[in-house]
Amino acid sequence: MNEFRHFINGEFLASASGQSFENRDPVDNSLIGPVYEGGEAEVAAAVEAAQLALKGPWGKLGQAQRSALLMKVADRIEARFEDFLTAECRDTGKPRSLASKIDIPRGAANFRAFAEVLANHPNETFRMDTPDGAGALNYGQRSPKGVIAVICPWNLPLLLLTFKVGPALACGNTVVVKPSEETPATATLLGEVMNECGVPPGVFNVVHGLGPGSAGEYLTRHPGINAITFTGETRTGEIIMKAASVGLRNISMECGGKNPALVFADCDLDKAVAGTLRSSFLNTGQVCLCTERVYVQRPIFDEFVARLAEGARALKPGLPADEHTDYGPLISLGHREKVLSYYELARAEGAEVHAGGGVPDMADALREGAWIEPTVWTGLSTDARAVREEIFGPCCHVHPFDEEDEAIALGNDTNYGLAATVWSENAARATRVAEALDVGIAWVNTWFLRDLRTAFGGAKQSGIGREGGIHGLEFYTELKNVCVKL
Ligand code: NAD
Ligand code: 6OD
Image 1 (cartoon, protein in one colour):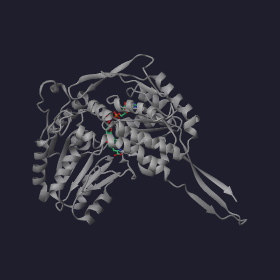
Image 2 (image 1 turned 90 degrees about the horizontal axis):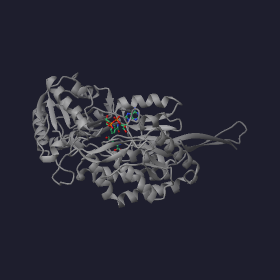
Image 3 (image 1 turned 90 degrees about the vertical axis):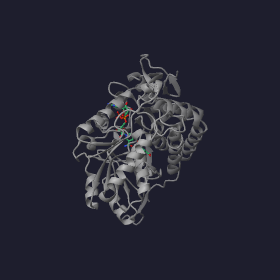
Image 4 (image 1 turned 180 degrees about the vertical axis):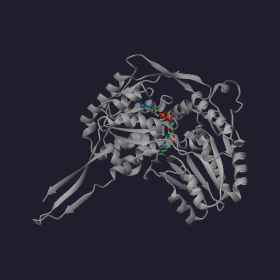
């Protein structure tokens, strides 16, 4: 049994109150171990450590030295790949085949990519004329914002945490991380890695806990926090924005989605079906970029639905280590309750169920786990709640369309605007449609293909701001213009 401690000022600490909550394995609901719940005392200690670190050796490092240190962190995550993989799969129940290809490699790549981007990013300079003819030189000076609060969800724990911690540290900030209460393990391991790499105490801090009335809320309210970067539900984002408004702290928000896939009759059908199976069901549908709405042009609609449903039925649930496992459980029994309530709702709203719709028949102890079937629906109206609300489970609704404009309108008929996928072999059409969709990320004939130099974020209620590549610079640094009269 593991116990999960906070990582504050380079030390692993229990809560002053002794209060803890349980971390359970979603595969069979067995206890992994207690997680210390951070209160105001732990948040205050972590923020103070982070403030002091800014004034210590960390604050004196140049960009090249910071980048070199973060490269070391990336190397060390890779050296401890097996530890991270085991911890991530235990917390989430996801297949090792998935986490070893996406979650853990991205954990290392996020440090490497931002260390490189920052080390090679030029400053802007403007030479200007002045009436006396001597001129002046303007240049931009970027300084760290200070102490950044990093608040993360449970679906891709290490990937999403490092996607924020990487650029925050590369820019010279210090961080206090609040991982999801469901997935404390890899954030804690990262504390060990920081110590092993010689990252000064206080630069990277982790406070475990819940959201409201716990570490999450206390962190967002703490006046020593200079900016908050958040990934999670849109509703939580709204609450955090209110907290951030006190003291006018900056925010970066990566929130929910109800992402469409637009499948045209001129697509490569094999690729479109395989791609949609992946985009709807990867990580048991628990990726913010997952497709929950599929729009298919009428001539291929019936065949597409039949093949997608057949593919969904063929997916095998199983243990993380089993090489035949296609998908793991949902993150928790609580989340399964929510997703199953949408399965019921969809039926009540008139859905025809082509695959899944319930709980798979698991053996022995696994019956206690948060298993659920990949589900394909048709027949819902565009205003059905199952079509409009983010479910965050392995399910999608497939709806027919006739014309390109209609497909675009259907794709955009949502309050969210995170991601979309277009399947068409006509490059002109695919590009035109991708450009017409109100989203932060549009993929053509692929899904979740990521170049870390690109902007990442959502439109509408899916987020505020862009991170990734140099785009996080606006959030993670304060830009000063220095004007020197010559
Ligand atoms: P959540 O909003 O419930 O929780 C996210 C984090 O916020 C957790 O650490 C939680 O403890 C904390 N939190 C909750 N209430 C808080 C409060 N009042 N103050 C401060 N912190 C608080 O989200 P979740 O269930 O962990 O994750 C699933 C959601 O995340 C989905 O909506 C999904 O779309 C979204 N998500 C978005 C992206 C993206 O990049 N856009 C990526 C992954 C997940
Ligand atoms: O790939 C990324 O950088 C990223 N932030 C992915 C988010 C996935 C959401 O669950």
